[in-house]
Length: 322
Ligand SMILES: NC(=O)C1=CN([C@@H]2O[C@H](COP(=O)(O)OP(=O)(O)OC[C@H]3O[C@@H](n4cnc5c(N)ncnc54)[C@H](OP(=O)(O)O)[C@@H]3O)[C@@H](O)[C@H]2O)C=CC1
Ligand SMILES: O=C1CO[C@H](CO)[C@@H](O)[C@@H]1O
Image 1 (spheres, rainbow, N blue to C red):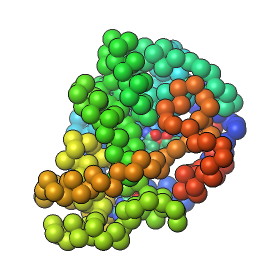
Image 2 (cartoon, protein in one colour):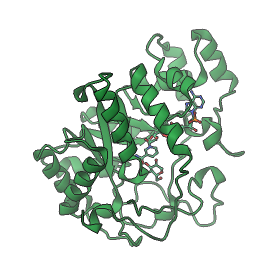
Image 3 (cartoon, rainbow, N blue to C red):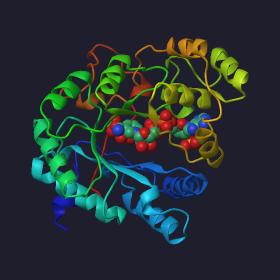
C-alpha cells in the first residue's frame, strides 16, 4: 500500500476518536445486523472500516446474512478528489472493509482539501468522473454525494454521465431542507438523512439549541397517540417524507427502538405539526471550512458567537489512518 492510500490531513486538526468507544460501537453493529439492520453507513473518515469489515465477515461466516443482503456505504474524504485518487481511496476502503465491492460510495463533501488542510480548489465535476470510473469498474454498485446543496446538485446533474443515486445530508426536525429534498426527489436522487435527531438528543444539544428536545410536550403527545417514543416519531416523519434515515446508537435498546417505526403511520395533521419545527438550525456545520471553495452551507458571520452545539469538533480532524 503506498502511503497516499491511507495518509490523511495531519493538520490543522486533531479529531480524537475515543478508542474505548470502539467495542461498544462494534457490539451495537453486530446486534443491529442480528435484529435485521441491513444498511451500514461508514467512511474513510470514521477510521472504523477494518472493524466494520470484521463484523460483516463474521455475520456472513455465521450464516446470519449473505453479502448480497447487506447495503454497505463508504465515503471518499477531501484529499482524494483528484479524478485518479478516487479509485485509490475506494480500493483502500475495500481493503480495510475486506470487501470486493461496496453498494454505495459517496463523495463526503464537495470541497477538496489537501492532507495539510489546504483548500485545493478541485472541481467536484472532476472528482465525479473518478466516481463514474469506480462504478464502471464494479468497485461500487452505486455512486452518490453528501453535503451537496441545491445549486451543486443542479450543476452536477447537468454535467455528469452517471447521475448520483443519493445525496446524504443533514435532515431532522430543525433542518427540513424542503427545497433540497423536493429537488432531489424530483430528479430521482434519494435523500439519506444523517443526524436525523439533530439537537434533540443530549449528545448534540446545548442550552441554546432549538426545540424539539426529547421532552418537548408536542412531541411527547404525538408519541403517546401512537404508543411511540419521540425519536420513533422523528424517524417515522422522515420516512413518510420519502427519506432514508441513518440514526446511530451504541445502546442496544435504542438499536431496537430506532428500527421499530414501520408499524404505525403519522396522520396528515401530525405531519404538518412536525413540519412546523423546521427552523433551519444546522447541527453539523464544520465552520472551519467555510472559506474553502465549494463549502455548501451559508457562512457564519465572524461577529456571531458560534454556539457550543455547533462546535462538534473542539480541535478538528486528524486522518492519519493506519
Ligand atoms: N455525511 C456526513 O457528512 C455525515 C454523516 N453522518 C452519518 O450519520 C450517522 C448518524 O448521525 P449522528 O450525527 O451520529 O447523529 P444521530 O442523529 O444519529 O444521533 C446520534 C445520537 O443520538 C443518540 N440516540 C440514538 N438513538 C436514540 C434514541 N432512540 N433515543 C435517544 N437518543 C438516541 C445516540 O446516543 P447513544 O449512541 O449513546 O445511544 C447518539 O448520541 C453517523 O453515524 C454517520 O454514519 C453523520 C454526520 C455527518
Ligand atoms: O460523521 C461525521 C462527523 O462530522 C463530519 C464533518 O462535519 C462529517 O462529515 C462526518 O460524516
